[in-house]
Image (cartoon, rainbow, N blue to C red; front, side, top):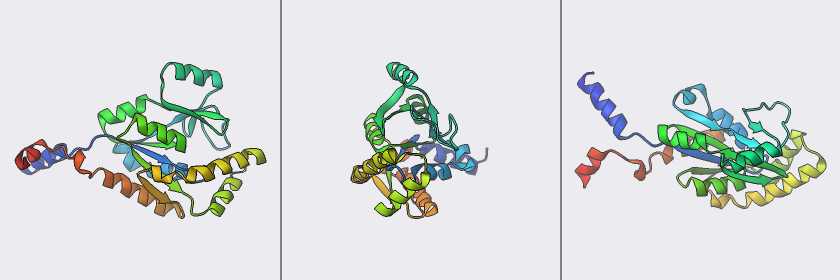
Length: 219
């Protein structure tokens, strides 16, 4: 290794950032799942980006796959995992249970990289308590009208279920100030760019500067 390569290597190591947990939340119909999928390009996956797949007791929707959107389990299986302290957090919403596995979060903090979590508003608040270093981003629909239209277009719920989701979504939208960042998802490509900018900028916070030689020179 020549001198220039050695200097670049030392700089990369000195300014290496810790692994990041990125919590992306929104009310139903906000678009958080679509944004997460677009963020996980092959190039970012090679750089250590990944997605934390949650567990749920709700039924699988058309087009979903076990282990991709969620791990679909029954109430008995979920209760057994919860008893074994498998989840970093768990909660009940829209009549179903959801849980975030603990191990993937611990792994990314040790090895570096980025792990995205697509979670409900309640789950995001619980996770922030468990992982205070996590980045929290709230995705908002452009309007109440757009939210209602997106929920109807799914065509996966009964009228009663749709009303529950809509009422809960309106209440959840009022909680956006509890998040560090908020993005209005009017156009998905624009929203993806904004979320990516937030993740990259968050790495530049001064507390993540771990270049010990430089710190010693400045002290």
